[in-house]
Image (cartoon, rainbow, N blue to C red; front, side):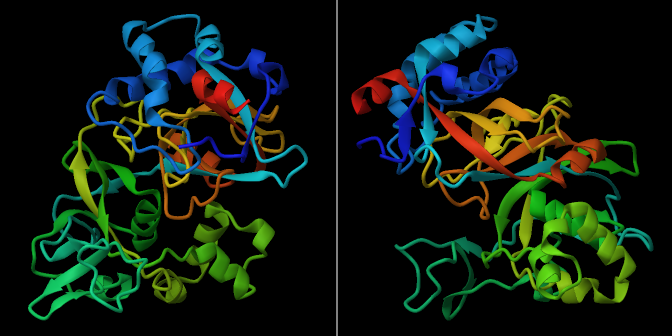
Length: 364
């Protein structure tokens, strides 16, 4: 697979702020992917960064916990700007792991369930997709008459799955539940004193439709002011319209329980390793290969630090809204403070992929 012409190989001197980054923090995240790689290889992205080309870097990372991390990345990789010089910038947003109070049983206060995957939810691909079914749908409902589109958010929240014992936990606020769906994971502070984690298991399959764009289109919030915080504030001030807005997002997420092995790390995500706050990035997995390091320059992004964002990140997650070679979602961490960071990240950015040297030299 040839390396895409979208990559323009440059030097590390061309990466603004490279020398001042915390390369060891990025190396720790990269090392987690290195240990997963022998378990199950990552799929190579369509832009030609082949998983096999990481073998040497992964092998060394597994054997060395604390090398000169900057030297490690410079020896094994060559930076490549995504898109030609002067091209339109990329774009980054932020995501995090919410932490909310929850009950193991329904009460008068805790009435909003997080659900596990139903037995009649079936994965769909080209091999079993019924003729005429929307090709976007990756899940469907198994019925005696065959596979059909699964119930959507409104139907599920109105009770169509009641009585199946799918409830993992109960929350007090439907808006909290909605944003847990958006983030795909959460830590639950249970009323019985336990700390539990839920993470993505499956979804109903419909397209994601964010409330921010809808509220902007309705003239309720100016588009340039749309953040998680402004959306929450609008919903809190318009309680009678919460369902009207949230049900426009027909996609519904189902969860599974997951351990909290290291409270400093996030949930295990699409690349099958725990996310590292400030160092893991979600990318378009159809284009990019998990485990790829990306150097992101976003001078206008001050949520992570007042001097702008120039940081090495590791591709370890994906998302339905993350589409394009220069599109990324930065993992901010867990809890309310991380949410304050993630909720305001909407910034132009320049993307540099660190390409294994064998591939980069072959493209030069």
